[in-house]
Image (cartoon, rainbow, N blue to C red; front, top):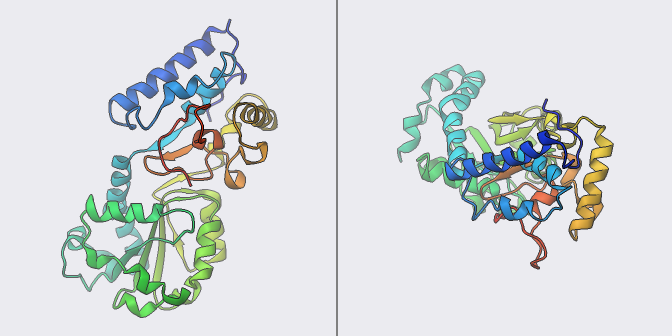
Length: 310
């Protein structure tokens, strides 16, 4: 695990000054090479100027810890799912189905009945991030429309209409992120996935999943297979990356947020205390540190991201 030095800048410490410069140069290089979006979406230079000289080292540590997934990386993750992860899950469920799966079949309008598969997204009251993933699957990965389910029909009267799945006995639920698992568990109870799992096999595949949330879902619904494409854990807790106690760093951060923004200290960490620095190009999970997501209505703060936050 990476350990940062003291959380405030010592202007006489050449290592800290060099670190600040290297983080900004690295971020600029990522943007210039298209690994991260252009500065119009990731305004790191103006954001770092929100902080005093003493605070800039801590801000650079946040920027250095950023896990950023671009739209192109999202498509690469979905390609990996279709080429590697999904065939493995299908074979584990039923070897005959697994061996019969061909990605090319997903591009045809005529469905391969040997692989009774359909893709969908968990409904959320606050975000359509799952539907963004489905759109990428359709347009960039070229999965034919008949491998998706009609949402208004399947959720009629707040009950899962299993018959709409037709001959599809495998439901693949996709989302960009699974944090604590609480949103998915709420969704699963609302639409009675426990009952659905008696007649269909259900996979939940988030692009990125936190170990804590994935374990909670499988504990609550052992019949649902949860398999993130990429996994993060408590090791990605930002406040554990310093050579001082977590509580000390967290308290410094809360005071900094309170002094610099209109955010309350209680909400500074992000939802459910995962304490992560995760950003997608078109969405920022509400588990991400609030100072990364912060977009006030006034011009007193230079926002880091020109991205929807949830």
